[in-house]
Length: 422
Length: 112
Image 1 (spheres, one colour):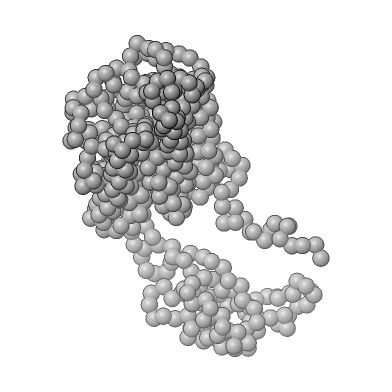
Image 2 (cartoon, rainbow over the protein chains, first blue to last red):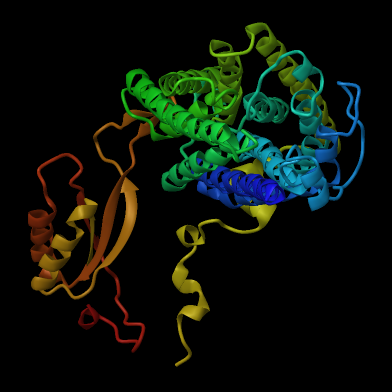
């Protein structure tokens, strides 16, 4: 009987990882829709291609080397031990013999973790949209998912020196979101702003082509985040843990809501109108803000943490534009600036502010510096930007050879299949 | 023959079209366009960046009519497309040199 209960708990917690991982995978669709809604029509197919490709590269590279670098059998605390490909899984005998200490499938843990690295990568794709060549971007993703992300992930979640220093990051405000944003910031700086975005002191608006898609994407991310934060509790099969997961989901939900209202109200006050795109970024900013510690705060405090994230994201978007750092979708603000806030806000309920500042700086500096170097090397060898003419015509044509919305530019009636042979 | 070109507000299309049919106009071409007149544009903000809204959506009607129908066509458009507010549109009248039916090759005002 005892063995049966142990096996059942193992199966439940494994199932939990798998389902929560599937929710986080769905965030890839969320990012894709959000980004495609906020870029112009002529650049839509390219960003769709970028998103589905980066997800694919992420899962492959993480399987080959990234996962083992992040969770190595051994390492110095700073340099993880190198190994390749995934190993086997636990046997029933070993699980029962452990008395339940081994409580989930190792492969299910890989599945849960791999979708996080894909999330970090897709933060970058929106920030460099509309002017970066596709394949140099994908090349960067290879490095991001095999080295940059896993090494800093090892330092915290893999038991490295950040973890030992008392740095706290429940689900990845730092390890995932700030890391992605720092890589994005480096990419934006090395690549440069979109042509025509900044003229002297003037900032030119470049409205997104499909706000319904952008909104749908935000809701998809919101749903996926239940897996992101909920799954990061890592276990559900007893009363205490089931309760914890419940509170995590409630707090996550409230932080997003707080973020929406914070950004929407601030947008109304600052601009006189309720900018939907700011409200969408506010939801993401709120979610990122709570991700470092969604369990310890009360629901009320979680709402406030999210609301502050919503305020921060609006200020950050406007400030980055003033600094001529061109981020078409607000990714650096929602994931980076709010990621920093999320990490520091942990000190409101647990942990130490000093350790949080330390971890924030380490993650940012490592990611930004290494990314900057790799972006620069890629630029030297392959070039990063499309040509000025291709940027004007739209990267859909130059990178993908097709229109995302062909009926808007060509007559649908021109297709011969519309007229049956008489 | 004349080509009557009318720029009207989009929501007026059905009303204008029905009224023109009832006075004997047999063919109309409609295009979605953007345009502005004497009113200056206004500015909006997108994510904190200012942009000017001057081109507004309109519908352009191309109506080829016999000389005898021109005045009635213009009067009908004026009475149905007007709201009394800025942005109601304009009507231009061009001389139409020839009209030809593609299916049969017929020419002249019988084609209209």
